[in-house]
Length: 265
Image (cartoon, rainbow, N blue to C red):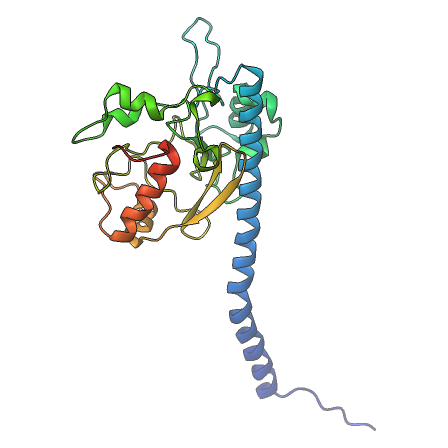
């Protein structure tokens, strides 16, 4: 008779400990790789949306699509003029996607998946927004302190592609990770006087992805911890919208220049 020897309890515990150690080492790397994949898909979506935005302008003598989500002409029945229809986060997936299809831009990008970042909030099927200055809301005039005049607003608010210079530095779309019923707000103010309007999106490992008017997209990593903290906690009833660190000011001014092309003189 051949006597067979099995594993001892100590040997099994050692193997389990080694496997657990390897998993602890590999999981962060796997999570980073998965997030990089999501970021790449998101940047591809932004490129496609900007391509659609450009094609609309080309078909309409350079005029830009209405950047206000859900906007209509006020007629009865209303005709949607916004780049997407009125999407509500409480609606089911099919209803949200139907509203996306009702938007003007869907004719140029007939894939509802392009309108959603793969890392977006659960149940939100529209996670991108047009920024104010791209034929969106002229909300920048509501800044506290010394708001810009109407003339100063018009200089940075575009309704036609001919209004734009340096299209490689002007943001059109921004990934905010959730449904937005307007355009993305950030104050247009002087250096050192600015404030965040909407919270800075903290996406893809504490940064943000944006699509530019020349059809390229990129990822920014936020420099300021105050930027990240505000973006991660945007539900406070009275949020502090003014940067508190030098790096935070750099983040805000980078966003202001991307949206408006410059700071208020």
